[in-house]
Length: 216
Image 1 (cartoon, rainbow, N blue to C red):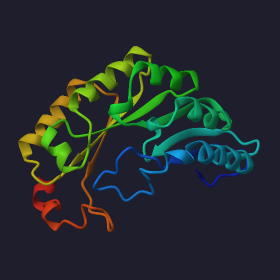
Image 2 (image 1 turned 60 degrees about the vertical axis):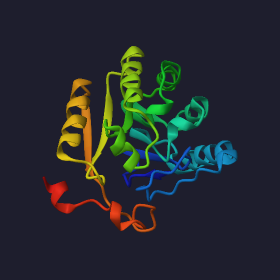
Image 3 (image 1 turned 60 degrees about the horizontal axis):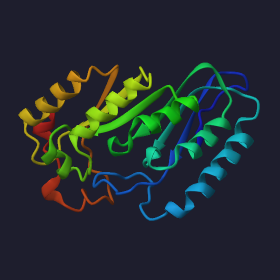
Image 4 (image 1 turned 120 degrees about the vertical axis):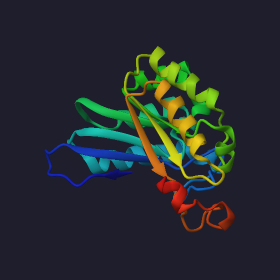
């Protein structure tokens, strides 16, 4: 958990890291684990205690729960963490989601806990590009996740996409862009694939992104 530096009564932001994943993406360099599910409850309780000690009577203007895969852990557990964070009226409260995890039941629990924005890890809408990135979801699940967000009244959501995976052609990227825009998201974040030291991607030079292709 981190809290942006602020004056005692100034608005500030809270980032909560949830370091648990079902599988680790080949390009990921974040602190995450795929074999520590038994620690989820203890970890989140510790986060809540840390928040209470750190924040005191201040109120947060933004809260972002990232990972890792926050949508992998029980929504009720995330709700307990959110309940420990005092927020200003109208605070933006975001949870990162894997498309595989998202359904109306999960998002309803998030909304009930005060979440008003989600960020969906799309990365690509082309199956072979998802495979190259080590992602496990299907593009169909992205559409299902967006439909679920709208069904529960989450008008604010972001779609994350990555460009530059090995084997991704310009027409693949165009397919992703067009498919994402068809979903009419309020916000899209696009990132060039970066090779981070210590990742499976870094250990396989044949899969490194081509700078010229990324530039195109």
